Length: 178
Image (tube, rainbow, N blue to C red):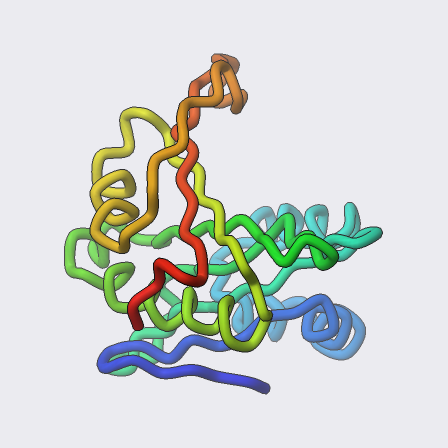
């Protein structure tokens, strides 16, 4: 299984093929451990995403588990979805599972490596990112990584029965400084 590393993290690649393998060959308990899930409800949610297609016509998914080297605990994820193969662009997403790991620079550490993977290995020309207007840490992180703000998508996501705006960012290969 492909892995990348940073000073404090192991970034374990998850592809549709990896999901196929674990869902076909691992027990429920092994699946939960491998995916870093703490309940069968969380596993059901992940399986639902899988059942509805990690890969579809001319789009694909490429994601990484963020594993803390010290504790060997899966602390979050980061990766590409809505990967338009013919246009060499994808949207990046990320998140940490536990508040105890937030505000410690883990995303600032992981994202440059994953962005470089996108431009070099996936041959992306453009990486897009969306953030909620009130998600100040994410907005600051994207700015720090040289993403350019392109605008706001009005009432773009349904969250807790309420439509929310998203700020759109992009980073071009020529703008990336590893």
